[in-house]
Length: 365
Ligand code: NAD
Image (cartoon, rainbow, N blue to C red; front, side, top):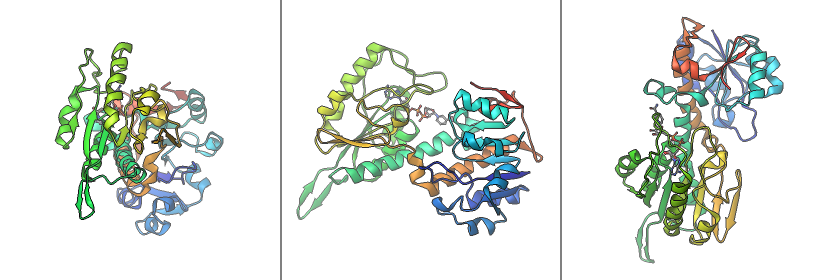
């Protein structure tokens, strides 16, 4: 079975779907692997690192046109779809529009989007959402630390004592927990808030304090995600957080509701109450932002407060983000390929949830 890895073409994408380490293991496992020339360069993996482990280097048209499975980070360009092998398979990490699904189906591609991977225990090794959120949570703190005008740890020096910076993390899911751990390592005093009470213990085990707000409704779904809050509770939350952000030097916000616009947690009025020099890194910028003032993809300053809305942050640490992504993909391949063929058992939740088109049909809208 032939696996193809094209170079990512999006302007802000530096990751590559397979790293030499993982590609080499697939070669040992009996796959033919072909990588487009230069596909790993932006992630610091030169072509030679692939060829030493038995991977072939090819041009784009042969990689996408002659592989049984094409592995990518982002979705293919619609304009290029006709070059993919009819009936071939594609695995990538993308939120498809219905028009794009129609085009994938028209090309008779068996396409899997790992955005839809169920967050169940046996899918954990394939969990791209978690691995990339981990990278983003870490990088968010570094961005904030290099934007704020102050040091994060407490320092006692001959030039006087500097107090530790205060970091507030909103949303303590995968990215939030990694942000807490990173800010703690840098010596900050960290607190966190989430609507799911279950995370309190996880926050505290990382050495941060958990901000408590009485929430009278059940804010968690059976699947472990947050639910959208009622209007009244949301109003209460906004007032609670407007008070909490006043003290913060850095706010990292990560709150998300799967499939919905991100909840607004920091209003423009709350930003006015923050200290000059404070920084907000809004990781929810891709889905609208947790701060009312966030401009996705930009950095703005309001009343001395910097508000960063980075997009595709994982791609800014392309080496390790690719390494984790590639391992996730390899685990996914291990699940869907058996004896050199695709095993399309739609009774299996992992396959059913991630397969968006097959045999000319759109399976997921
Ligand atoms: P996410 O990106 O959907 O949301 C980030 C965080 O924002 C969540 O903790 C959520 O509770 C919080 N949030 C949402 N609305 C909020 C609001 N109004 N105010 C404050 N916080 C708000 O979440 P995620 O990081 O993808 O993970 C969500 C859950 O999935 C976690 O419980 C995690 O343990 C679980 N998970 C399970 C598996 C698995 O078993 N395979 C893998 C990964 C994650």
